Image 1 (cartoon, helix red, strand yellow):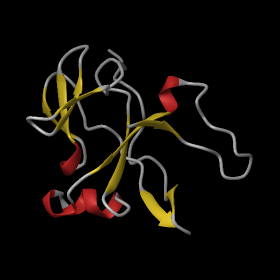
Image 2 (cartoon, rainbow, N blue to C red):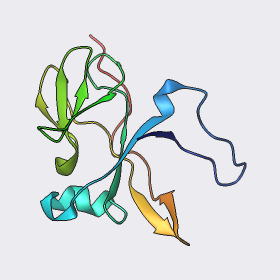
Image 3 (spheres, one colour):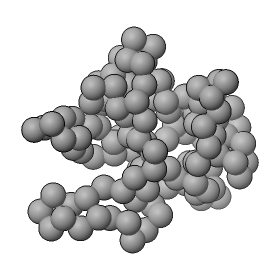
Image 4 (tube, helix red, strand yellow):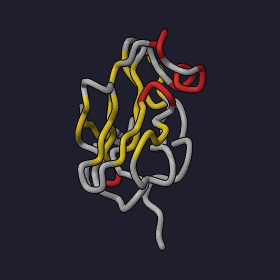
Length: 121
């Protein structure tokens, strides 16, 4: 699922920039690394939808491999292992956004794990 964060104070949905787009998905926590589980909320994880290679949008899901996929330059990311790069030219994992559940609602629990965006040559 693609989503955008909402500011809890002003209720502004941060959809004005594609750089704020998030990938939300539920994973099997038993198959996730400890690092991934530490950022998940009841099995839901969030990663930036911006590929770390050239800034294309990570929009595809490879069901047979259970991987996130950037169709621009074919990078693959493992959401169960902190969105690490499995294949392709992306130089680093997708930054993760820690989540929590408060009052029955999914909320952001911290800052992105690393800078959102792509590498410049």
